[in-house]
Image (cartoon, rainbow, N blue to C red; front, side, top):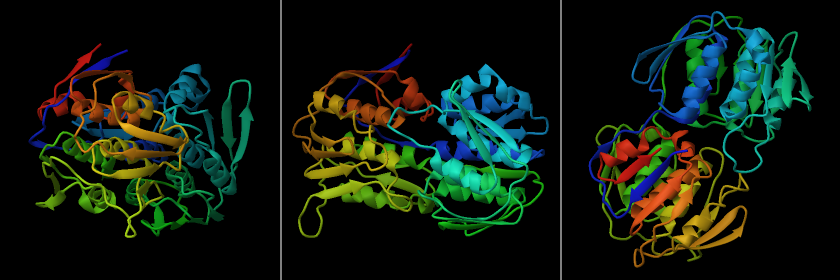
Length: 436
């Protein structure tokens, strides 16, 4: 187990490049299983979740070559389906939630898949109903073995049809799309997730030979094809990391330039930070400049009532940034209600912020009210443990702004989603030590 020791109170300065998007990387890497030809993907982040998925594909028989920093070649010509029945495969999947997206492409190309209950963050119930219901409507048969806790899925053939998803699940939509692209006939998916990650997956599949209409909307029409070819694809910059850097600059009163952010794919993230009083602007071709501020004020609604920041399906605010907005609010002028609708355990890290002196009322598992300190009182240093990826980065932001030295243990959770975060922030002026 490793930990971070953070000396708070240091300002950041300079430029930083965001890593490739973690969530997109997991989707498009799984999609390489659909073709027996070479797929080249660039801007893959060097983080543990993605590296574990790449290793899982290697163990499954996929030929993987590293072509350069963040650039890999995948060729799934000789997939070993027997590996799906091994304890090693089961273990690899239980520590990586993204492994659930192997089901769609395996089912499409090989007509069978095996998957244990996937792992990942402990942030509450994360059901798989949307995945399995959608795949069942394409003709898949599911069984669940209580003894070994394995889902088994098979089909004689996949056949297109109409489906209305019960939730706009990003990974659920990705899984169904990766199966539907090889199903007979036409598949219509309504209430599909339309996040940039799903758009990117669809664009890569089209390059490989898929026929998909409606990319970017919540209504996808897919005509199945029998075979996929080669393609090259570049992953978007990670919008969650971009948002994290904006919050770091604001909490430490720093001026910071975030380079090559793909601004058009950030949705309402910049405007959400402006509602929190953060001064930022688009500069140059595709950069964000965050202005140094001694204080920032949270907006209210037009009638003067307290602002509510809530997650919503795209183009709404992504739930992965609410932990960051919560910690940002602790040093703002004003108050805000954070409403995390999707996961019932994601706000439980606020007890650590309260120990640091933050004024937070945890209303229930989904809602927290934050009364900002307006930098009148600095957060106190603390010893903490990272419960999940997003809470981990929020705690790191809090520690960077605290008056003293803090310790964060279980940083393997942070490493799952943020590439060499200590080294990159130290290059900007942070004081973060990694201790094994």
